[in-house]
Amino acid sequence: MPQVVIFMGSISDEEKMRPCADLLTELGIDHTFTISSAHRTPERTSMLVKEYEADGCQVFICAAGLAAHLAGAVAAKTIKPVLGVPLAASAFGGMDAMLATVQMPPGFPVGTLALDKVGAKNAAWLAAQILALHDDSVAAKILDAREGFKVAVEKAAASL
Image 1 (tube, rainbow, N blue to C red):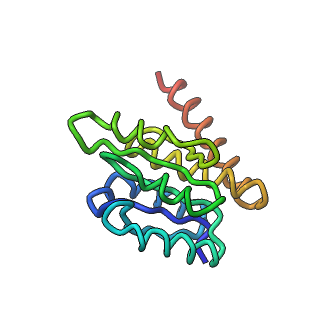
Image 2: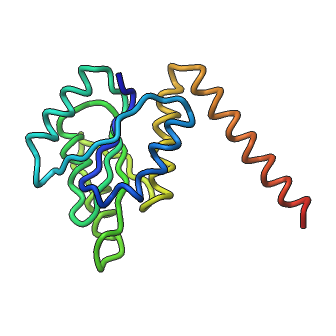
């Protein structure tokens, strides 16, 4: 039963979104990594949201480039948190995807993260923080990781 579902609009998005799945694995968060398109497979997207929600999904992460309507299509079908990761896939350098992801109508919010791999990692961290509201073991893993970040900075500073 996945707590988090990562939707990508295309297989070409996998390289940019793999860090999201890897981090969720590292944190011990059950997740599913799949492909569904808001435009090419809208019925599949709708069906999967309903199925995953019935199976206990708590957070949806959606990554798409170009028109980037995937997160909005998912947000229209659930009241669970939807996190959007815009992907640079056009001559606009990701600005088109960013605007499509962030500009949602009132009542259908999408928490929009940064572009590409940084956004993918932060989507995993934010999903973990949402789950940590009701899961002390996830909260402890986040705190441990942050301590590790602190130690790494102090070590780097000492090495100068």
